[in-house]
Length: 247
Ligand code: C5P
Image (spheres, rainbow, N blue to C red):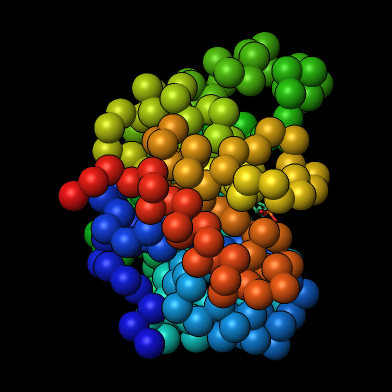
């Protein structure tokens, strides 16, 4: 199949309602991930690999997906001294993946941009982990509220030349204001209407998140644990279709 319905996959102008969907492959091993991707088929073509799968053979699998024409988001949230981050991002670029994450510290972001090159790799910054509230930030030594730090770091991401931000659906408007019109906004915490929220506390439906200005939606369990993952992805694409601008 040609998995990518459009070459607009990491741009801000989706043409196919599957373009915004990124399926989180939070699975224990490559065999299960490979089987799931095959089952989803043409229902989605963009996949996120994080710690669990990444440290269980998932990097070679990322290349396998890329070789099949699928898109890959490597979510390792890098943060280290500049030289290490630059070299790490340059190595990620060689894998041929499309998106990778770093923490939104100014040094880290500048170093990541230096390693990105000008090929297909786009970098996303994580401003404040959504598991942190104001008290957690205070305990970590920060004087800012979560909202202030998210806005500050989104603006710093833009200055550093980062391509986009990962944030919760509730932060989309504030992040867009700080990031400007060009940057990508990628959001987890997505649940189709009526779906089990699981451990996600503040959720939006796919259509709501796209209407609120999200460019990509990271969706795990509503697809990966569905009885029919392809049908689940297709239903999500249908919800997105109603939210995309006409034309
Ligand atoms: O299964 P579910 O749709 O909740 O998966 C969401 C994915 O997005 C998971 O891979 C999770 O680690 C990730 N994520 C998140 N919340 C964040 C950042 C990442 O749910 N703030």
